[in-house]
Image (tube, rainbow, N blue to C red; front, side, top):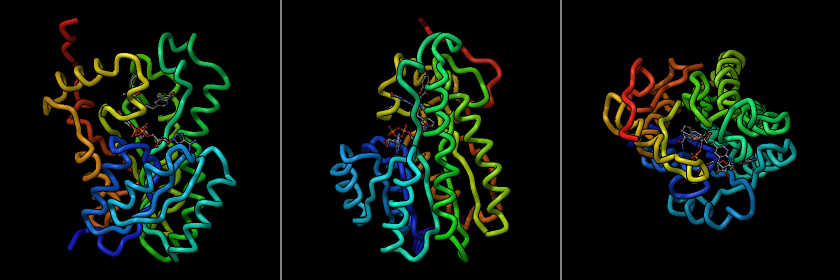
Length: 263
Ligand code: NAD
Ligand code: 0WE
């Protein structure tokens, strides 16, 4: 029997088979969890429904995390099928594409900052507000995805780095607020993975090559690496862990001196 048998998990952020959220859903399903999904808009509905079906789920709800009404509608639809929720996965981020390149000071605008923080950081608090009543009386787990650019200067990551710093503080404050209710809140800081969000980034290949060359494990991380860690963190095996940022990056973050590439 899997270590998530009997658990109900809601997963946001699936846009394709390469999404980190999809790796997490696969691992949780393998460990016996029952799944439900949120999709951003109708453009993604058919794809998410067919992916969900392959993991035995027909619970898929539209949800724009920048809208409280949309979040409330999605959770109240979910509550018609499920009387409780054990796991909630937040795997959503957005900043205007043109702010993810070039000089940070030049590239960053007030509106880009606002949008990045709203969609990528506040939405985790908003989701926790919705999930909390459904987690009443059970040992719940919330999980989000972050990146090293929250705490180190990563070229071109720019305003997303600030939003991830806020998201990581969010993990700690939510963990502080929800702990007495038995709800744990954690994040995985993943190494670079070629997803749709990454495909929009100039020179993303260089990030992959750099990480592969310099990470202690000498490779990049896979959807399974992240999915397995996520399944663990959201399971009772991690019952003593909350407010934690767990690096799943082949060890890249520990390095103090890295080799530059052939270019
Ligand atoms: P992805 O493009 O597959 O997923 C991003 C998701 O965000 C999409 O499903 C998209 O629909 C959703 N989204 C964006 N705006 C939304 C909104 N307003 N409402 C609802 N959903 C919205 O890319 P991914 O790389 O799997 O990203 C998932 C998470 O992992 C993000 O938080 C990202 O910052 C984080 N992350 C990614 C990497 C990487 O290298 N790919 C590394 C570390 C962390
Ligand atoms: O968090 C991310 C990417 C999040 C992201 C991606 C996009 C692309 C398309 C947020 N908003 C948008 N907006 C778009 O229009 N990552 C951790 C992956 C990533 O993105 C980078 C990276 C890495 C790694 C951007 C610059 C430098 C490195």
